[in-house]
Length: 517
Image 1 (cartoon, rainbow, N blue to C red):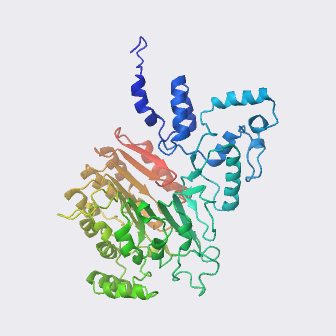
Image 2: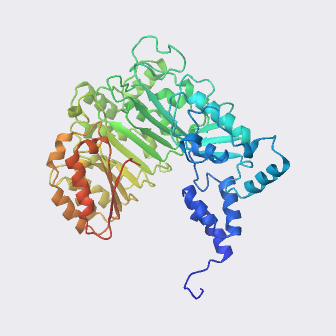
């Protein structure tokens, strides 16, 4: 320690912690750290050039192109819809004299990212689905012009799949680890070739999903449809499993704006082959999605076997009689997901949300009792998901004064769950539970604009919620997720901000965020 009471880090220690210091940091922050000394600059320069994925450095692809072409941050020097860039002559013009070339080489040595040496680029593409193929072709051309050693570009954000693109990877130059399956009835049904669905019944048609085999790096899948009358909630999704190149590397499946068919959840492929699945997010409660599928003889044989199962018979009876008991439906479905009965499963995050329908009044009806579902997950002698840490129960509406007691299984059973997710109308009851369950450190609250009944918001007692927050002894964070629905409801947004501003619990941090994670 020197006279100014500043701690000096031993170089050996710094070498150990340096990857942690720059982990998941912005380029500006990494640059600041790199300027501490010449030796630190060299070390960080090596990390950010050769180990981007390990340190979670992922620049936006447009910004990276600007960086390597030495563009300034002004409107005149940005790519315009990925037309040919105005290339900085000092950087690559072969007609420059030797002095200019020497100056250029000297300048390059002090670039934090040594892009001429980089072999694998980890980045984000925010260009969206419009003209994605043309954009990627131009991106590849502009990168290869300067980054001569570049072999692979990994897109680390969810990339919308073009089901008709026969070579989306451009000869394996691009790797898509996160893909978004997006479809609708009018313009984008999930057809692997033109007019695959020849009968016009887009919802019940058994699509092949052959297009997935063109994306060989898939690890995470998000599924959604459009938010309008052209939405397409598919009943048959089982063929998805047939064409994923390496199904064992798939670790996340998320039903975003898309209802989950029951066939999908009890499919043998899901139950037997997803060895590394650690995150599953589904939407249940739509009684229009029948579990029986008569498309293929092979499936018929499976269904005949399934019908011998008492639980599946009850499930079909529930659907056929339209008994509208979502709580019972969820219990029966989860009894038949064999994945959850395997103690070797790696599931860390399980989220069960409400389904979507054209009339929010009928989304996941009578979903007011999670107790049997929790008993199933947290069995006395056979805890079925030993690695589970995050549990989403937004499908359940707990709005009565003592409904928090329906969550008592989370206290009574041995488990590792430390995060809960619920809907806004169940906020108070989940807070009551958190005041009893000392294991819960994070509570996430969201308002689902596609499925929540907004009339229930009028029954929220914000004073009670604030008192519960101020008296809690174990929660560390509450995340309130703002979305379009919050913005449209100013009274609700004001109440959320009031909670944050009046929080007197110094041990509990309240954040209002834009995007759910």
